[in-house]
Image 1 (tube, rainbow, N blue to C red):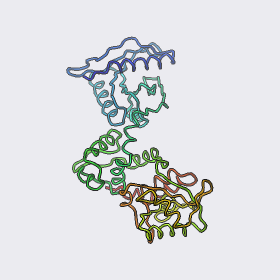
Image 2: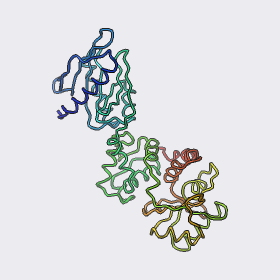
Image 3: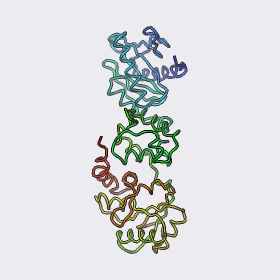
Image 4: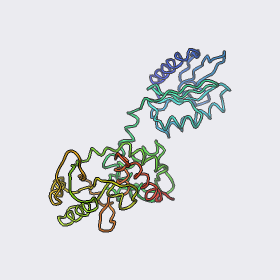
Length: 359
């Protein structure tokens, strides 16, 4: 049995605080590590005085990680135990250090109560319903955020760009250059968040849409060195000049954001050119000089970004005479742009990205 008495004490304190606010529920008895069947203990069973002179019991299982998958497994176990050994007014509860919004929704869908040490809870006991949420479990979210780091995100990007199919660890390593030791960590996080699962033949994404949306929320374009410029001429002319100059001076240049999306899934008008420059960071300044761009702090119509990851350039697309960033990068760019970026991102998702996600 796991040692979590201190955490259970904190859970009990959280429940007491919640019940005091109702003025009609109180705790009558607490049993820690309650044996409910041979070889099976619950972390706690709490007897309650409910409104209208009714009594009930909370069967509590504590999980150390508040992600959807471990929460779902704990919920299934408690429900099964109550079905076998419980009574009418016994209610299952999953407790955790911090529950993600998706994990909390899992509990609601499964008709299981939930509470975390941050004060978030969903408690339904007969006619009583208590919902408190809004305290974001940053520590719990951090594990998911790590898979979107520059190196690890190569694996995510590769799987999202291809048809949904099983991938072997060795295959992902060979195609991304990510070490074989990191890939199982990525898989573990995706399984916990119910965005991936093990299948016969490897590992597969189970919810690519949720994964891409979560990545767009985590994505910070400010982490890329960039500079803004002004240039005379129409957007298309400037874009062509950037591509031509890059080619003439042996620089890898690819269009991003609205500029790239206009080549593969045109949806909205735009007036700021976006392009990525690879190789040495000095290439960004050199390219601006070759194209006669004037550096400005306000009112730009050209934005250049420096990217040091050669893997991203290997995934760029040749569209006519232009080089364009991969569709996942275009989506991330657009989702983080004001104006009609969200609309353009949705068009790209529907026309280009989702059709790939077929078994």
